[in-house]
Image (cartoon, rainbow, N blue to C red; front, top):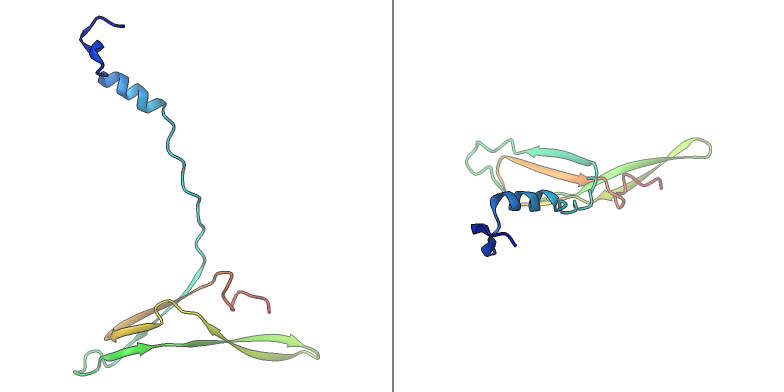
Length: 111
């Protein structure tokens, strides 16, 4: 033990700095790569007109996928696209709608 005034169990500032510099940093959380997003916006053209607000608005989107078949005539198939923010309680001016192109998206699948 040391005989100076720091021997009573208190650590000095220098000892604290050395202790914190020797401890490893906490592990980083696993990095998640975000999926691409299709984003579009709707604009209410009546936003500046009194009474032009839309209450309880909702949107559904269908996409057309074509697949070549024999003899090279495309077959059209319509699929429903899942949306984030598919409803808006008070649509006054602008409404942003998004579709995430993840593994469950029908726009990404080969079928």
